[in-house]
Image 1 (cartoon, helix red, strand yellow):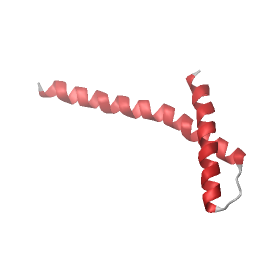
Image 2 (image 1 turned 90 degrees about the horizontal axis):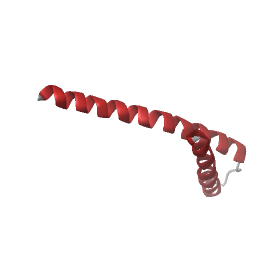
Image 3 (image 1 turned 90 degrees about the vertical axis):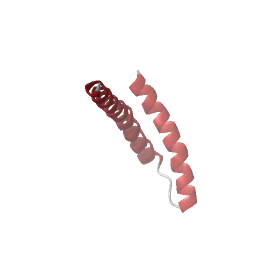
Image 4 (image 1 turned 180 degrees about the vertical axis):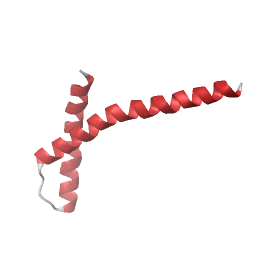
Length: 68
């Protein structure tokens, strides 16, 4: 369920950001491409960030325990 929620909010925030950027750069706003890119980035983030953070935390704990 969290992946669906992330996809929904990624699309919403991506649309807002895409609209603002397109207006500032005077380019045509393509809502489909913006939504797809935002959802892909959001899903990658929800998978990668905990994986990277867990690895860093585990290494820090292992290093700390081996020094004692």
